[in-house]
Image 1: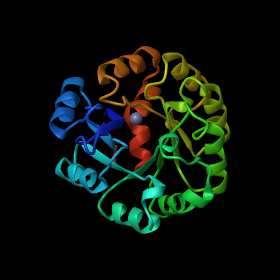
Image 2: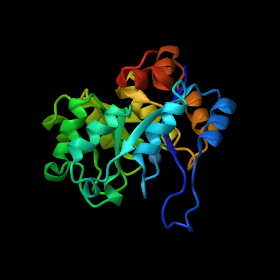
Image 3: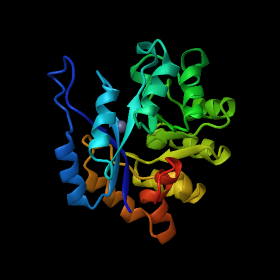
Image 4: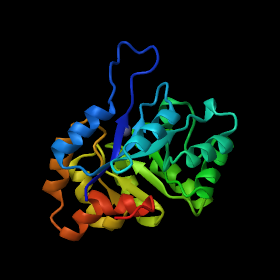
Length: 244
Ligand SMILES: [Zn+2]
């Protein structure tokens, strides 16, 4: 079972003619079939996101697509109500991209409701990390120490800038998961040396990164069969409480 835990999905919304990126269900399923991917976690493009559309798309392909919702906390007045509604629609997790939206990941005043609601509904929070002061691994550590039942997935595992810090933070905090999407193969090697494969996930950041390239990176670096099974699918399914 191979699960791609990080795919951007949806139509192009909003006034962004200069950024013509979209990824439809037809395109995604075609690529998944080509690449031997069983399921994909779909995350909205962050601009003018539509979480209901995400839920609807996952419902149309229940065996293949797993929907996450995006929350820009500035755009949701009743954050807890909105997250409950998304949970009721079948959304499995919440994505935050703080550097583009003007807040820090450890800002309780802005995100407290989001983190509490995610704990309440058993949703992991997928956070962009590493390329900005608004999304550091140390901020993630503060979050998991404040919200002790939360599961925090660090997308890109600190990217280049904070890759070492991401591994150290994950080592100290069992509720942190490393998503090595779009990270270097050396980052993946470093993570494997320090963190158990039950806390590492594969993703591709499609359509920005080519799924085939990311698959190759994981296949070149991981030689242990148990680690491969976990990282390529079992870890994310366990976190989402879905059957393997
Ligand atoms: Zn991404």
